[in-house]
Length: 396
Image (spheres, rainbow, N blue to C red):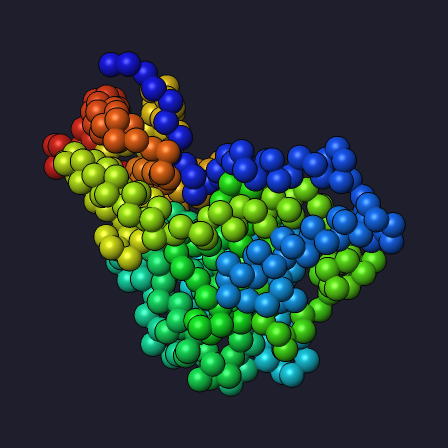
């Protein structure tokens, strides 16, 4: 079997595209002015920032003045949640609603606020990883400051009923934030039509560089300053702007959101072939809803193996994959996302996440489907867990 190289971990990060890199390059060498300077080189840099802001806003159905550039999705999440908490605490509202399987950028921020006098309600998800808007409704209280629910899950790819959840929040007169880091560029988003008050996104998930993100904040919401200092980002986030990264993000968002349905039509059949093929392996299960998931995402639990060993052996065969979130890949604990949908610890430990894009060919799919069963068979031959399972014994 010929060894190939297949990158199937786009949910972790993506390569900077040639188009994005070409847009960025002049700002490293020629158009290097400080955007706060009043001479032409500086004014040109500021104009390029505002053009990128317009592109991000257009992709989200927002106004340019509602877009603030940040360093990443985690920063955007922190600013939205902590900023809203600080703002609403002055009105006696110190309760936040989120879900049990958010990204740690949200969960750890909520844990921080709990240590500072806030209460947090964590709504459950069902066995397919879906949130019921009625659970959100029932969790909202008179003192609720914010509801923050992710648009699409980073591990199992489930797409939440965001518009329905936002409607519940507006009915209850509560602000609604969504972490859309995995969703932007993969599903159609219109913040006005969907009733989204704040939205986080990150560039490195859509072929921009690492270290750039954005936060949409609906007009009328005045968050406290994130960083004090100069007047950048309309006085809200001080610090000299990273012009190349901002320009790159603008171009990346523009490209990613220009052909969402066409991309989905190309990727989804390949994703489904991978799902059906891997599920032929005994003692496997698909995690997340079969249909309401990101086009390129599949997450399958494979009993009797350890996820880390699976990833290392796939890597030896030229396949880059994941067992969950790249942000917690160094942890030996099972995924909180998989535990939240009811998986047992030993099953959650053996998960495989593949996240593919258009560059994955039919031949690549064939190769993955050839390699994965062989790797699983080899690992199970060495696994005491699998041996006990086959004997019908309980593994302790």
